Length: 274
Image (cartoon, rainbow, N blue to C red; front, side, top):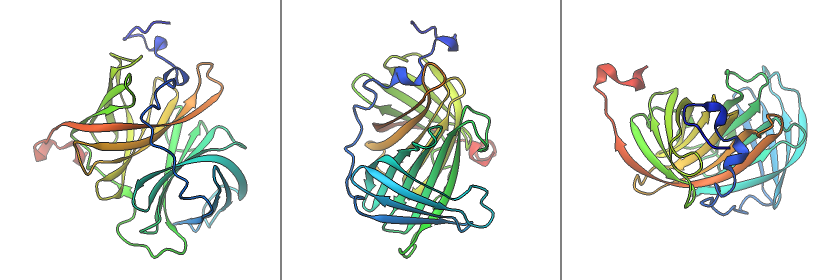
């Protein structure tokens, strides 16, 4: 099926993007193999993760005010090394395939950020795939540095991302809630849209950037090291529904980025103050 740029019904489904899109994915790391990492959030909820070579066993123990019931499970996972002691782990729940977890673990500073993605359900938002961001502490590690928090640091930047020799996009970070993407190369070349986003800083210059699309039922969580703006590196996951609209699709990827430009608005018109 050919794509008509203005007819969103012809746009590729999530599984149509997947072949070759992960060519620039970093090798998975085995550093978490054999480690138990317990994350505690502000509600007192404790999530125990016991990592093996390629599977993670977890126990979810809700704290006061957490309406989610206690549960346990085991899922396949992938983990990527972002920076010294900083890991990005991905797993898609086998017992509940309409949910996936992205887990940022700063084992040096004792801090974590969990991003839960769900197709439908009770998470906040109106898009087909919704996201919840939960900062926490890693039990047994003395916390240091700032906790993960929303940031406006990316606003005004225009960044090109290269996912493979065939896939390239650019992002323009517009405001705390919106960004615009355009496909520069690949099967979606010429397509563009503006979608919801969230940005969290996990270390100085290292950001979790997540987006939720309104046309295709999918969302993404990425983590990117912007400290060298000529050589940005990201790791990410896409999660949503396949072409049938019924089967959850989950795959990881990576990209090399470069800052193309930076817009600085006059203070009175700064979208960061929206």
